Each structure stands twice: as structure tokens, then as C-alpha cells.
Image (cartoon, rainbow, N blue to C red; front, top):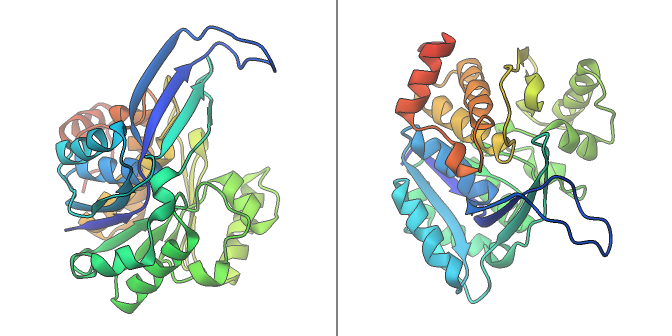
Length: 309
């Protein structure tokens, strides 16, 4: 395996709305879609569609959504050996997308809240064969911390996407990550610093470096991405596209970045490719359904005269 994703899966319930209802009001929405999501699953699917061999460690419930989630992993060539059944409901994510393609998301963790450090121990021998561990925060923090310690113990680099943002995240526990990938709002919440300008973002990212982080990669949506470590400060501007739905764009970025990082070992190249992959994803509706396959992405790169490796 190339990548072990230890994290969440959700069922996305996406309503395309003209506006959010006021208290006590019922409004009609023009469209609805249901699909597979969850930050962990999204990142796994993006990497797998690009050609990475992905192991997914996650928990599903005992309801109607579980079989569909497992089938979806299998359809995307993701190992389901450690997609574990749980006496609980599956995770769900009601998502509301407005006419400007902005989204609001509620998550119900369900079975995701039961993924434990013991599950990592059960999958240990297979995770040891992976070149990268990818984590998010839709599962219990103790499981995330255990995964980081596991990666450090066995010499496997770890990428942590600290989302959804958690102000009580223990930075000392996550400094063992090789790559820490927040968006700007998560960066602000974790540091207590403003992120109103690129200089503000640099300062906040530098504060994380001082706390022990090795590489801080801040995703800035349409504006692009900033990568800082003790030797580099690289800003990659975003691409202008006709955005239809931004849901899951950050996960598309991380899945693609993880794929090209494992494939080439070149962080800058992986960032540039991920920037383009995420931009392409927002031109289509849905979450995982918006993620290009390797062949589709190759065509997009040709059209955009993208970087070659």
C-alpha cells in the first residue's frame, strides 16, 4: 500500500438552496444529491482515483448506509479490510450549498466516534507497509494522537488535516506530523492570530513552526496555498475557474497532494498538482463525484499546460 488513511466516512446529504430558512420557516430547495463523503473517505478516494494504493481504517454503522459506503470504497479500489462494522449509526453530513457555491455543513459522527487506538493496533502490520499516514479530526483525538505516535515509531511520515477545527487540539501531541495542513480559519483558531492578509497567515504559520511543527501547508481556497518550514516559504496562487460547488475541495487537495508526494517525494510539485486538482473539483457538483480520475486529470493538465514530472 502507498497511503493509510485513518479517519472518517460520512453519507453526504447535499441540498442546493437559494437561501437558508429563517427560524420556523420552510423554504423549497431546487435540488438534492446524496453521496459518499467524510473527510477521511474523501481524501482516500481522491488519492485512489489518481492511482495510489490506499488502505482505509474507519468505522461504519449497522444501518442502510454501511453497505453503500463499503461498496463505494471497493469501487474506488480502496482496501476495505479495515472498514469496521459498529453497533451505531453511520456518520452523516447534511450540506447546504448556496447559489454562490458557498457551503455550510453539519456533521453527525456516528460510528466515526468509535474508531479507537486499538483499531490501529489491529491494522498495524498493514499500516507499516504504507509510505504515508493521512489523518483528520472527525474521529476521536486520542485515535489521531495514537496514529501520529505510531507513524513516528515506525518511521512513516504523517499528514494531519486539523479539520473540523478543534480549539482544544493538543499541539504537543501533533507536532510529530511531517505535514500539518489547516485552512486559514483553522489556522486562526489554533493560533489565536489574525489571518486577514498573506503576511498574517505567514506569521500564524510561523508560530506553529516555533511550536514544533515541521511543515505547515495552509490551504487558502481560491487564493491558493502557502507552504512554510524553517527553510522554505512558498506561495502557490489559485486558479480562476467557474465554481459550481466547493464542497470537498480541501479533501481533493489533500488526497492529490498525498498521491503525488508518495509518487515523487517532491513537495512543491505535489502542491502545484493538488492546487490544480482541487480547482478542477469545484467546477462539478458533489463531493467525491467531483474528483477526477488519473486519465481525466491528465487531460485537464494538458488543457491547462500544467506541470509535468
